[in-house]
Length: 547
Image 1 (tube, rainbow, N blue to C red):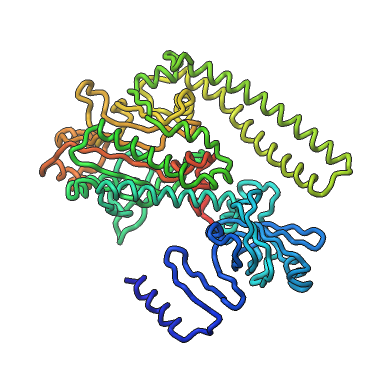
Image 2 (image 1 turned 120 degrees about the vertical axis):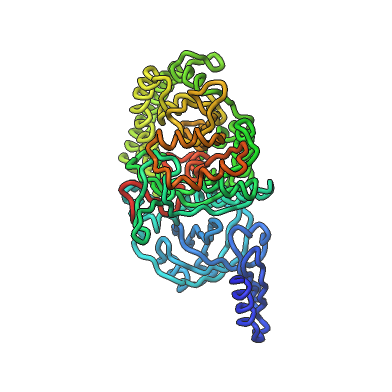
């Protein structure tokens, strides 16, 4: 309804008779295209230049980067839909406009009109040969430049960091993943439902909660919508929730956020095996969608696309006990032992660090000699910064591997997997792997007891390869009322706040299952990111509340 009124208002606004030189077409898919017929320029967007080859268009955006040389200014323009090199020739635009373009700083806003020329060498494959320009907004001393910045500095400038090419690409992938999530469930007749954010109970009873005052009563920010999802699924059969989730874990690992988004489907008449089938189909849908629709963004990010393509096939499934044997090096996978592979990884990482150090020294020496052109100096300076950043990541891995090896050798069966254990296990696989039937003692109280072994439950975790670890957790839900009451008492949880949940078992209980996928962890894996903080516009985590 809001859109309808806005649309009508817009039509009313343009109900006057426009000058004959201006044609306005409203295209809801592409926003507005305004054709100034007297000049022959059509306002468009960078991601629509494919259809404008050889035409005269107008682009509006911000200066991502610029350089000038002998009567030419080269501007890399960004408009939110993509990036395009725009060439400004002094002889064509005139001295005044040319000087204005030269003065324009990074992130200055500008309108550029000109001819669209195909150029495969340029990002996006097209170039704009500018015939006129208008500076809209100045920008001086933009704080984020092309040099390397520290993480804390970039996080303090997150509101501006989002404009960078890499962060732009990550957010585009995130958007496509969100679209694909809804597409998957809607096409399979799942109903989107909303779980409350304020709750009076902990869904799992184990995680630290954010407590707040709710009109004089203690309340908590939701750590999962799963219990409410079960109630809604009893009404709709198949549902999914998609909303913010909060966990007050004072952790600074690369996998943790205090506020993140969870997708939590619940399915009636569904057992563990069927649950795993849906998980696999769902995650494969996300992987294939990103590979098909986001390849340019993945290339900007620097994702190893080949590794992601190898993951786009049937997943390996194994019970917890088998996974433990692999972690400890007691079971081979394709003739390889986890501990041996990690030891070899350490040697390769150390060798790469040494090779990068030699490359850095050689480039620094070449620059120090003098005689290089400005472009060569810039290229080598940027390459040195890239190599140093790569070595920083490699050194972190080299420091971690000995700890991973020690943890693997000394893993105690029955314990939960830590991040290092998941890394050791997944190192031997190209695809995500499903670990199922977990020890009851380390899983949530509502997990269904395994009929073949009462010490285990029908839970499942999906672990992503390349060291990303758990991205999905789920399982079959317990249907036995007495058992659930015993479990609530065993965990020391207040029975009164779970009476409504127990009602689900009192009135027509059926076998049912579900799972939860963390959006940010999934995006981090798909993009190949070292930390989840880059997967959400404004991350909230331990030690970070602003901006």
